[in-house]
Length: 168
Image 1 (cartoon, one colour):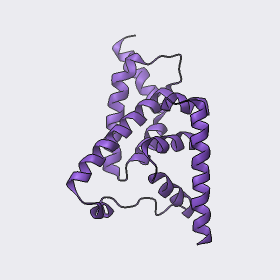
Image 2 (cartoon, one colour; image 1 turned 180 degrees about the vertical axis):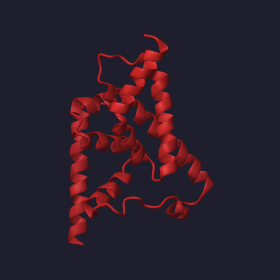
Image 3 (cartoon, rainbow, N blue to C red; image 1 turned 180 degrees about the horizontal axis):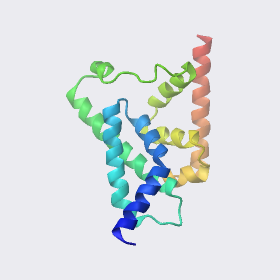
């Protein structure tokens, strides 16, 4: 494949699956500048890896795997850097909450997801995106049984949290 055709194919696939990019960036970054930086970082890594993409697999699965790996690595670097730069009390001023115009149940869902570790955030994102357990397992590198167990635990945890909010 010529370089121009290779670039065109990459751009076409990226355009077709850009919602994955938006979802991952929104889940791991609070403000627009950070989301844009993360998106650029993901696109660069996708391009670098594109020559090794196996057409026998779904592009979306491959893209999720790379995007989530980059996001998790970036999140860990940022968390470490932030921990050494500012105190926990100052985190309140880092970003404006852009979810205020969303319905209350969506805001509660985002708050629940924010509390999760990196793996569970990725798991919820893929689950909410309608991915099968097999696809989620492939992206995250865990077994389907592990996916099912984790999703069940997350659902139960979410039910408990939401029912305690309604009762209180």
